[in-house]
Image (cartoon, rainbow, N blue to C red; front, side):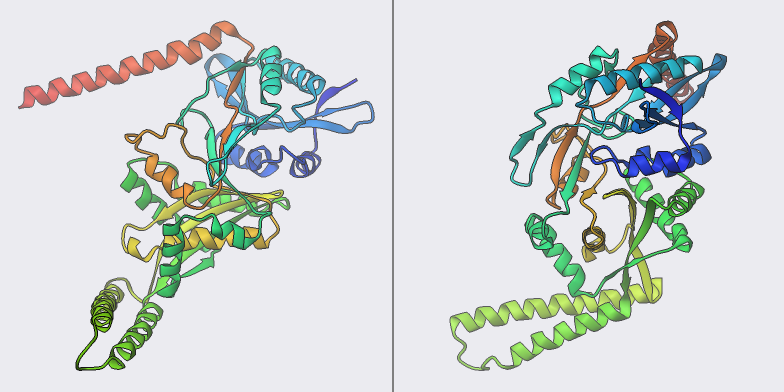
Amino acid sequence: MLKLKNLEKEQFDNFVVNHKTKSHFLQSLAWGEFAKAKKNLTPYYLGLVNDKDEIVGATLLLEKKLPLNLCYFYAPRGFVLDYNKKEIVRTMTKKVKDFVKEKRAIFIKIDPDIIKTSFNYQNEEKDNPNFDEVFNTLKECGFKHLGFTKNFETMQPRYTFRVDLEQSLEDIENHFSKTTKQRIAKAKKIDTEVVIGDKDDVKEFYHLMTLTENRKDFISYTEDYYETLYEVFNGNKNAHATLFLGKINFDKTIKALEKNLKIINDQISILPIDNLSKSAKAKLAELTRQKENVTKEISKYKDCKKEHGDEITLSAHMIIEYGDKAWVLYAGNHNILSETYVNYNTYYEHLKYCKEKGLKIYDQFGTIGDLSENNPRLGLHEFKKKFGGDYVEFIGEFDLVTNPIMYFVFTKLVPLYRKLVRNRSKKELKNEISKSN
């Protein structure tokens, strides 16, 4: 007989991190502790055990308190178990439902890390042969599917790009787009560098995140949020957060450009002065153009050094490692010197880092399913696509309702009320502006 019980934290995390198919950082002990510290959520670490006290399934449940002594629960990326074993799925669902009802929950939300379909870099489609059966099992258990959404309407992205790190590095690089290869090469040619930061560099990371947020017109988190995330994940034996900082040292870049300029001048010097052939004239014109461009770049970087000092960080990314996977959780970039392509080089270096560590999956953590030209997030999608990962679609969100009346109030009436209040406020503001004019 299977039963649900609270697990010791280490026992829970060891099961999750070692699960062959459903290990995910959003189900980790570290994420539970972080959610408690910074998201005002209460974590529960539950396990489904058999008569021998062996764990056959587990889940991190995050409790969100609501008015009237109510709450709801969220299992980020779903239960950690084999979804092909129907009886375990059914029992886990029933036991968890009983558990949350005792806490006066109105529903529990899950969004399992179950792939619906994927496309490789050549746009070849691969469907999950077990998808329909798993989908129907969840619905039979009472879960309500919230639809195959196309953007970021859900708690976690329903689409992502994943790079298979079990390929050779050469194969991974061969799947990069042509422009990506060229831009990484350009960043390396001017001697930009990518270094691993530490806790003291979170401040610089946060600065670049704010620049990115302002540029893209969204606000996310405080500096303390990122500091706590970094500390919690690096204080856990099974998880790790790494900061990658893409930098340009102006002296090194100027030196690299001056070396390139010398090579160009040497090539020009060996061309005959008189009676140039047609091909020699074309070569001279090309070399002259290159000389002018490099000379301008040297001048530009000398001016940058005067304004910004010897060195500047242009890109900062936070990578989360858990089990055999890594996720590019956050990425911030400066507003200047985008033509150095430090951002591309930073992505390349932490992808290579994950490959060298023996990880199996590199997840870029989120993109869109609506690829229409007017989608404002299409640029983000196209950028991530350039690194040649599989374009993955997940199963989506499910709610298991335990209090139908309050669920209706919470999911339908409250959002409607908030929308009416926002629209009324906008109308009143518009009237005030109109009167003042």
